[in-house]
Length: 463
Image (cartoon, rainbow, N blue to C red; front, side, top):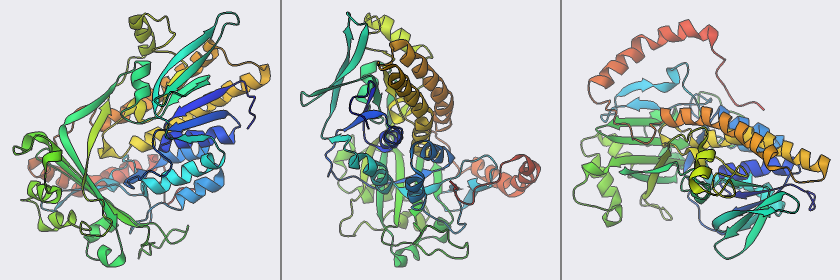
C-alpha cells in the first residue's frame, strides 16, 4: 500500500464490520488505519452469530477468495446439512412453526463470533494497519483556507491524533462516532434484561440435548419473555456432511442461549447486578416451562472455565431523516464544519443497531461493507489519477448514495426485528394454536404455489 497516497480512511472499531471493510480496502490498495479501543489480547466472548446471503455478499466484495472459503468452511452444520432457520415452540416445548418452511424466511449458518472476527482481522493485523488500545474521543474538520482543502482530525482519549479524508464509525451500538457526528439515533431498550450464556459441546453433551436442536435453533415467545437456544457444530473439514449424520469438530463446537426478561416481571431486584444467582433467577423465570427447557440453561454452568451467565444491554435504532446531516448542521450552527459532515460515515450497528430476534444485525452490517467499499475505491481512484485528495463534493455525493442504499435496506430489517420496542408475542395461547394449524395445513400449499417463482434454496454457500 503506497504510504504517500493522497486519500486515507480511518476506521473506528475492529469488530466484524470494521474488519471486513478493512480487508476490502487492503485488497484494493486504499490507504487506511483501523483503531480499536480494546487491547490486542483482551478477552472476547465467543457468542454465536448466524450468517446468510447478506454476509456472503460482504465477503465477496471485500475478501480474497481463499479467506472467504476459509470462513465458509467454519460455518456450522445441521441434520439438514444446509442453512437453517429457528423453529418456534411453546413453553411446554410443543412446536408452533418451523420457519424453514416459510418460502421467504431468511436462512443462515452459525459461526462463533470470535472465530469469525479473528479470521477477518488477521490479514489486517499482518499488514500493520491496526492500532489497539486507542479509544475514540472526537473529531474536527481541519480546513486550509489557502488551498481550499480539508481533512478530518481524529482525537483519541490518550491525547494522540491522526488525520484522514473519510472517517468511518464502525464502533457498534453504543457508537461514539454516531454521537459525535450528530446522528444520535441509537436507543437502549431498558425495558428488559438480556441474559446470555455459552459453553462447550462435546459429543456426550450433544447426545443429551433435544434432537430438535440438531435441525436448527429453537425460539420461544411467551408472556413478554423470549428464549433462543442454538448449537454451533463446525464440520471436521470443509466439505458438507451427509444429512444422515453429523460428524463435527467437538473441540470447536458450542451451544449458545439468550433469555430476555421484562423488568416488569421482576419485583425483588432493581439492578441485575443485585441478582446473587443468575442461573436460579433464569430458572425461576422459566419455572412453569417444560423441564427439558429448564434443564437446557443449566448445561455447562459447572464447567471449568465457564463464563457463566452474562447480562448485556439491548440496543436498537430508529431511521434518521434522509436530510439528517443538513438538519444537524443547521442546528449546530457550524456550517457543516463538524456535526453532520459528509466526511464521517457510519457502518453497521453504529447506524442501524437492531434487536437480535431476526439474527440480521451482523448480516446487515456486512452487507453495508459491500455497498460502502466501491465508493471508497472510487474516491481513491480519483485521488490516484489526479494526485490530489477528493473534494468535499466528491465525497458528499458518494456518502449520500451509500446512505440511501443502506437505510432503505437495513432499516427495513430494524423494523422487522421490532424497531425500538421489544415484541410481546405469546405463542402459549390462542395465537400459538392458530399458527400451528396454519403451519400444518397451509404452508405446504403455499410452498407448492410459490415454489416455481422462488429462487432455489441454498444447499451451501458457493463462491
